[in-house]
Image 1: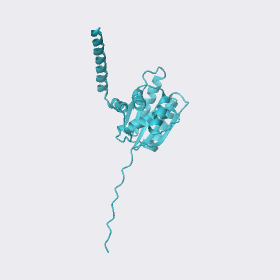
Image 2: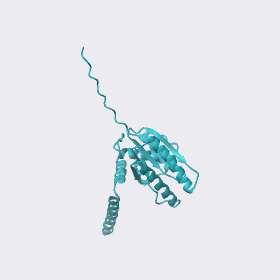
Image 3: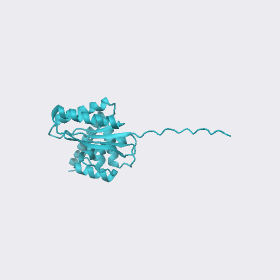
Image 4: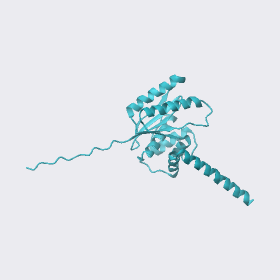
Amino acid sequence: MSRRTPVKRSASKPLAVYGGFDLSLTSSGVAFIDGNGKRIYSTSIQVKSQGEARLSEIYCMLNRILTRVNPTSVCVEGYSFGSPFNREATAELGGVIRMLLFEHSIPFTVVQPTSLKKFVLGKGSGAKDLIMMHVFRQWGYISKTNDEGDAFGLAKIAQCIGGDNTHPLDSEQKAALDEISMTKKEKAARKKQIKLDKAAKKAAREAKR
């Protein structure tokens, strides 16, 4: 009687987990998806405290979430430099959360609001309600708040950066990802080139007059 050789089963690679943080002093959106784009967890962290107590409360809540979910990487929405209110307090919150991600050894990418909107809406501007609607249309995710909608869009960007994108990307989404991946030096060079191109076009128009 011949003996059967046991079949060696290769352990399947666990799916990566991608997160998105839309930080705010009053209501921060948080979303996590797996490598297939399926929602794992999402919520809005709403606080009413002020000053250091507010920072501590948001820090502790996000710390518990990160400990439980343990994401592979995260995208954090960058500062809105045009906002005239609470800029210093918002910067403090951003610094605290970046430190938290560092403590958990979680790599993160900062995504400017215009790049997020370009990725989700196809243009660099638009109301937050529009992001909620487009997130549902593109990926079937129903967000309870604007902040969660933004966070889900950021998580999708993190998924694309991680190489696990499950949907075809249009030209605007590819352009948004290119913007996000640029270094500061490359961004400065691009802005300079755009300015030069505009000046050249203006000079050409004036020469035709």
